[in-house]
Every structure is written in structure tokens, then in C-alpha cells.
Image (cartoon, rainbow over all chains, first blue to last red; front, side, top):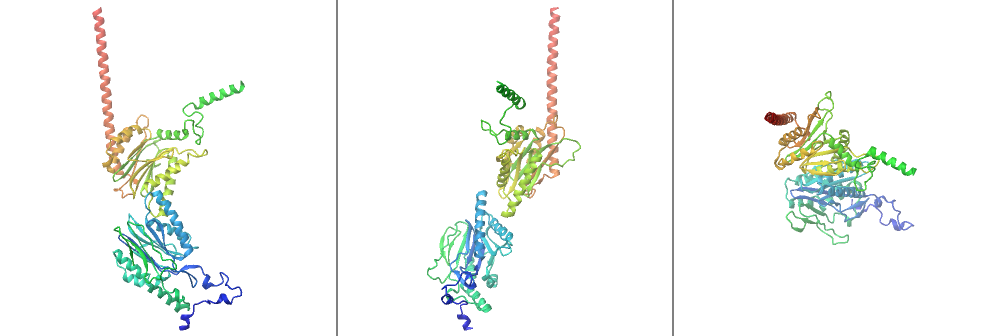
Length: 269
Length: 297
């Protein structure tokens, strides 16, 4: 067991022993896998908007390609999406939806509905389901229905939920979320709910799970989530997010910026 | 001299066959005239003016449209060949002008509405649909191998942006209206519409008003066979565009018919009175004449 714990799962000195001095790109599956977002994402609605949270790890095989990635992208002023699955696929999809939503908003003359954005995501995911691997949570605020969360999982279903979780890390928190969620939470309660779900603790659970199953281990320096980008999307202000630089001070807690429905701006968490 | 003679002949021929407003510049729909008019498009609007009257009213709780459907033969089954057609659950179109052209427009509007619903997840709003329809009708005016649509279209919509009435004419320009008329009796109809207090009208009252106006403008001597066709989308119809229910329509039609008949009786009586008066005057004059002659004699 102790041997497994210290085994990084790949040979960090392989390059040195190789006559070329490096390992060809594409040959080491542990290092050159497709960039996946081994992810925990979630979003929950409340009266004045939604709270969205995501971890920040992008992995390529066993290698953490980016430990400060932003898995929450904006598709319109008050509509955002959490992305999980293939990084490239979800970026392409959210770029497309951003484009179409912009046109739609111009034609409409006012902010588009979250339902329209979610429907667009679904059309793209469903019609191209053979070629995509994307699990998306589309959430935002509009005048008609207030805060809304729509889940678009792998096959291209569209379902509106009071809260949604997604990504490979979400399997560990189904029980937690179901137990902790209650209807009509306030904004602060929602923020707490989300930060619990995407916390470092739950990230560690993922690590142990993988460990138990195939002996692989994320190298200690990159275990656990360093920070979570949390975001509130609400009635009055477009959210501003505050991202840690890749060499920024290590964070012990998730970080984010809160936008309050009553015109106050403040740092939370 | 031969060429000038030939040219004169041609000019004569041209002016003989096509003497009129747009002589020479009205041959194709892609040609402007020197004073900047597109004659084919204007002629298409004239086609609308020759056909039965079409009216629309936008009320506070919905939109009502009505068509005076002139019918060619007694053998036609009542209710077929409709000119009021639904485009989506919340919107519908009344066609004024050539019905066949109008049906193509409705077809296209239906495609636009369903694909919008498919892609955006919400029903298409009135002004967006009106834009799409006018883009389509305008496209017909751009190319020499297409002719402009010979119809104007009244779009009645009750979507998330409230009740709206738009008219799109053959040139492709669309305007939103509180009340709108086109066709043979449009001048009279427009005057009558202006008399109504549009801000407070409900749809039931609008049905009566439209039936009234159509019966008023309808010319019995010229078009003996005709039908009144109406459609509405309102709170009463649960925001679904449908033909006005038969009982409501019948009630409105009977009232309108009675009113129109009463008007006719009054007119007749007036005319008879005038004739009488004229006859009396003539008789008096005759009397005077004979008296004068007698006096002379």
C-alpha cells in the first residue's frame, strides 16, 4: 500500500534514460491523453439568481495540464455555463452558443432567456452526440423566470432542476447534495451549499477512489483542489470573477466574488 | 429616316400597349424608374386593393382579424379556401390579395415559427416573426426572375410581448398597427376604425366592430356572393389563434347584417322622399306653367 502511495504512475526520469532526451509526444498515455476535465461542477438557483461552482483541474491522462482552469464560461451577460467532459468540445460548444445568443439578443432587442441558451446547448449536444463528450450545466438569470439551472448531460437531454451537479467528481456528492439541499434557500445558503459540494474534501475522495481502483495516484503536489472559482449571477450586476494566477499564493479556501441582488459588491468565501 | 420611323412606331406601339404610369420602366421587378419607384411592386399593391377588404384590430386582451371573402360561385362549400390561417399556436395570418401567394407566405411563416421554437425553446415573438415575413416578401422584389407577392398579410400575434398586429405589404415593409385595413373598402374601413376607442376595446367587441365595418363597406350590387371569415387570438381563446367561435361570429354577423339592412332601408326611404320632392316640385312647375299659359290666353 505504501509503495502504491508513493508511486506516481509514470516514470518521471523516462526522458533522461531515453537517447533522444525526451519522450515523443503522443507516446506516453499518462502524459499525453486528451485533456479531460476530471471535474466537479454544480449550480443552484435562488430567488435573485444562481450560484455556480467548479473545481479548477484539467487533466491529460494522469497529468494535471492546468490546475487553474476556469470551467465556468459566460455565454451572455447573465447566462453562464459550467463545462465538464472534453475541454475542447465544451469550449467549442460554448463559443457557438455565445455567438448565436448574441445574434438572438440583438434580434430580440432584450436579454435572451436562459431557456433559449439551454435549448441551444441541447440542440448542439444532441445533434452531434456521436462526436462530442460534453456535460454542461447552463445557469443564469432572466426577467421572466428568475434564476434557472438547466442540466445538459452527455446524450443531449435538457432538464431544468433546482440544483444540478456534474462531472466525474460529482458522483461522490450526490448523497451530500440530496441531504443538504432544501428549497427556497437564500443566496448565502446557496453559496455554502456550492462550496461544500466542490470543496477540497470531495476532491480528495476522488483521489482515493482512483487509488483504490487502478493504483494510480496524482502526484502529491497536485492533489486536492487549490481553489474554486465561485460565481453569482443575479439580477443587477454582471458577475466579475477573480481568478488566481497560476503562480499565485496558494489558497486554503475557495475564492470568488459575490454580486448581491441589492447592489452591494463584495468578496465572499 | 427609316430608323427614326421605326423608333416612332415602336414608341407608339409601346404607348399603345402600356400607356399608363410606368411606361417602359415597369417591365421587370428589378428596374427602377427615373423618379425612383419600383412599379411592379406598386402594381402588386394594386392587386391587393382590388380584392376583398381585410381588417385587423389589436385590443388590450388580444388581436382580431377579419376578411371579406368574395366568392365566385354558389357551388363552393362554405368554409373552404380559408384566408385566415394559424402560423403557430400564438400567431396567425389573414391574407389580403391573391390567396395563393398568401398561402406561400403563411407556409414560410410556419417554418420560421417552428424552427425558432425548436432552436430557442420559446415561441417566436410578434415583431421577430413580422421581420422574418417581411424579409421573405422583400426578397421577392429583388430579382428579375421572381415577381412580388400579390398579397398583403396581417399578422396577429399574442406572445410573451403581448398582443400585436402587423401588416406586411408586397414591398416587404412591415408596420405595427392598432387597427388596420386593406382591400376594396379600405378608405371607409380606416375611417370607421379611427372612430373606435382602441385602448379599451375587448376582443368580443372588436369582433362586432369588424363585422359591422365589413358589412358596411361590402357592395352588394357588385359582389353578391361572399363570406365573412374571422380569426382571433386572445385571453378568451387561451392565447391560441383560432377561427372566431361560430356562435360569437353569428351573433356579430346578425347584428351587423341588421344594422346594414336598417341603413339600407333608411337610404331607400331617403331616396324615395327625394324623388317625391322632386316630383312635387316638377308638378308645381307644371302647374305654374299651365297657369301662365292660361293667363296669357
